[in-house]
Length: 184
Image (tube, rainbow, N blue to C red; front, side, top):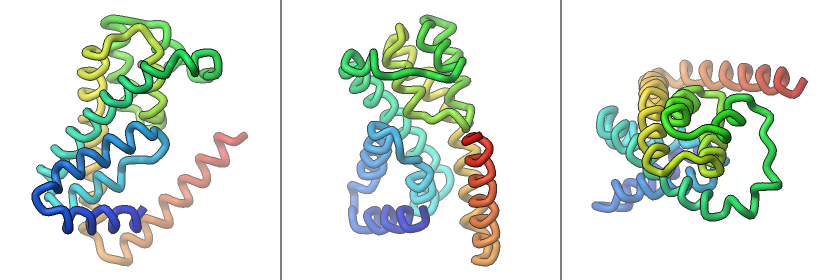
């Protein structure tokens, strides 16, 4: 992740006036791909623009990325409809809902850190929820999640090199334990 953040920072430094647009485009690409975490873009935004502007750009980029992804996924959803299965009661419920219930469910799923964002977008695209409801709910749900992510990143960036190594090793251990638990 540190390599990716460094690469993005280098791109930011070399892009001049287009740096804001580059940040948003990278967030959109990550959202459309649906498999890469956007944390390194958030980290680059915080490092390059400062906490306030970096957080704003991350929220804007992720919101636009979710909207573009929703639109593209909905266009291609008919090809995938019979091939995708869900083993999550919340995602299955989202697939069946519409209106206010879907709106609140999308907000909740965006806030939860263990539900992949791309999966929420894919299931939403295959549901009965409209793009306006999805866009608003998705953005509202992303704000608290991104606030926590940005604050965590800021704290990590302000630590010493030794502190960063300890945090990285601790994160890897926690990730491995969670992966091992989920595999069972």
